[in-house]
Structure formats: structure tokens, C-alpha cells
Figure 1 (tube, rainbow, N blue to C red):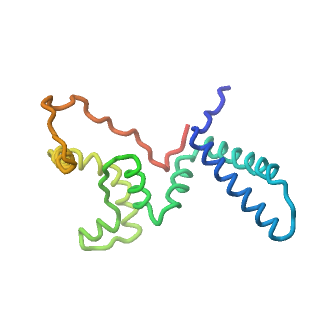
Figure 2: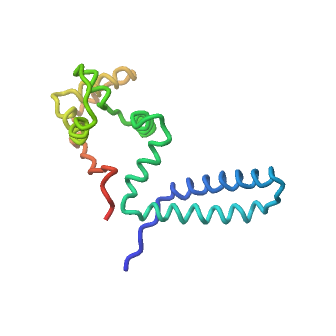
Figure 3: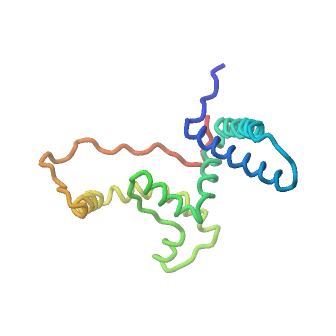
Length: 174
């Protein structure tokens, strides 16, 4: 039977940071109520528990959904999470959410109506990318605003960007 894949190294760093923070908080609390504690032993116990939970999360069939929910919970709303991620990754994004669509159309949707609309937004990036030369126009403009030449004399690089495989957080892992 093949073993489950290990979480990526970043999860180890995250787990170690979380374990340290939890151990310090618990030790400080115990010290505050008059108990002495061996901080090293406490960090080892907490660290082991956190690493086990990370392994369980990584192997969960719904890990994408869990990771998505944990990430988005760090921000005021999903839009802010998206914008932070795009900025950190150096990726330009265009988005439409319920508020944008309702504002643009001058109407509000019931939750039932929105449940019909929301799944159809997944192809927005492909739609925007296929509208004429919109991406080319923007690419040239942003390069120009950076003070660089948009044309190196070679024309197109000849390699079309590849679509990202479906990463719907509601999809379960095999």
C-alpha cells in the first residue's frame, strides 16, 4: 500500500510556529496561575500534537476546502484573501463578486438566485482573457508605466499561458 504524501515543507514551518505560539501561551497561562512547567517538554508535546493534526489535514479528502477556509479566515472577506495572494504571487487578477454584479446590474439577488449564479463565475478569467486584445493592451500599458519597453523586437514569446487545472476548494482529493 503506497504511503500518503507528506505535507509540503511550508506546513512544517507553519506547524512549528503554531506549536511554539501555543506552548508559550499555555506556559505563560500556567505561570500566571501559579504552576511551574517544563517549557521544553510542553513545546515537544504541543509540537507533536500540531504536527499530527497537520498530517491529518493533509491526508483529508476535503483538504482543499479546509485549507481554503483556514486561509480565508485570516482576512475580513474572500476578496481580501484573493487580493493578498495575488499581490504576494505577483499575479494580476480581475474579479467579480456578488456585490459587484448587483451594483453593475442595479439589482439585488436572493440567496437562492445567487446559488444559481455563483458556480458560473468560475470561467470569468477565461472569458476576460478571450475578449479581444484586453490582456495584451493591459500588459503593454503596465510595462510602459513601469518605464520599460513593451516590445523587444522579437514579437510574441510563442508560448501561450496554460490554464490552471481546476482547483475548486469543494473538490475532494483522491
